[in-house]
Structures are given as structure tokens and as C-alpha cells.
Length: 227
Image 1: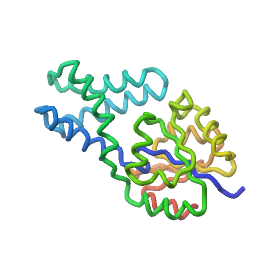
Image 2 (image 1 turned 30 degrees about the horizontal axis):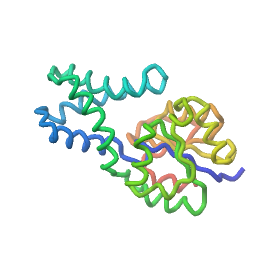
Image 3 (image 1 turned 120 degrees about the vertical axis):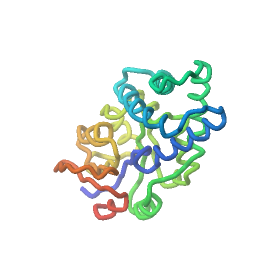
Image 4 (image 1 turned 60 degrees about the horizontal axis):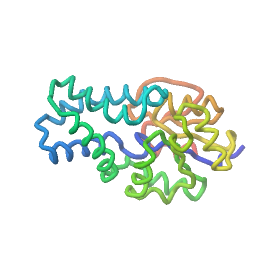
């Protein structure tokens, strides 16, 4: 069946989360006069944040635990004294400031301009509902998308099949006329494959592995070869 619907992940796929997150921390450190080298903080924070997001996807922790714990653990590991009050402030302000930085991956606008006349485009994201819409608006790409499905609106997170089934229903799409595009092998690719949805893996790091079940690209514009 001809492809009619393309579902995109947002963070790390179209929206350059790492770059925007780093700029957010740079701004917060300046605002609160945190005397800590940003590069040292980010080196410790990145794997801790990854761990907490995995727990969050697996429904093992709440959003609040993620937002507080990733900061608390990072400062503790760096042996940098920060009050609980300040951690809570940083946790809240991070969410507010993050969507004010809106770098997209190279090729995002060109790809969306190419796809928009040919397909119905949608978003499926595990990101926090209160900021995802702002990211789409402020980066200028919301106009391209029909359905925007957040895990919070469904009540479970990718890779739970309920998210993909909900998105298909909202878009009036089928597994046979849809493609999922995302960076996360577990949440985006394996989650979609378990629902029999074809996938394109945005493999930004260019990791060397081959899997016949899905297509892999290292630059967004490569997707034009397949759609």
C-alpha cells in the first residue's frame, strides 16, 4: 500500500535537543551565578539524564522525579553543593527556558517542505506536553503537522504499542500506509516495529550496524531517497 502518513519523533530527530538543552543550562547557570564549568556539568549530566529518561519511559518514575533527580544526582556526583530549593527552581526554569532555544537539525525545514505536499505529517513524542507544543511553535514547524500525539495525552510512553495505536487512530492511518521516523531504537523504532509500522532510523551518530527490518539514515535529507 502507498505511504500516506509519516510520524516523526520530535526531540533528537527534528528538534536538536542536546544543543538547545546545553544553551538552556548555560543561561540558567548565568542567571543563578552557579560557579561550575558547564562542560563538566554536562559531561556528568548527560548519562544521568539518559538513565532517568529510560526509567520514565518504563513507567518506573514520575515526571517530577525525573526533573528533580537528574539535577540532584549530577550535582551530588560533582560534589557541588546546591540547596534543594535551588534544584527545584532550576528544574522548573529549565522547562520554561528550554523552548526559547529552537535549533533544528540540518535539513529539517527542507525535508518537511519536500514531504508536506505529498504526505500527512504527524508527531509522536514522549516529551513533556507543556513544552512540546511550544517547541513546535517557536521553531516554526508546527504548521507542517496534522496530529501531535504526546505520551502524556495517551497515558503511556513509547515504546508502548498503545501510543502508536492511538496515533494511528487519531490520524486515521493504518500500519500499512504509515512510516515512523525517530532516533531512539527502543522507543521509536522497536516500538513502531512491534506494531508492524515501517521505520526510518535517524542514526545521527552514524553507528555501524545493519538491520533489514528498518532503514537507517545519518542525515535527515537522506529520507528523500525513500519517500
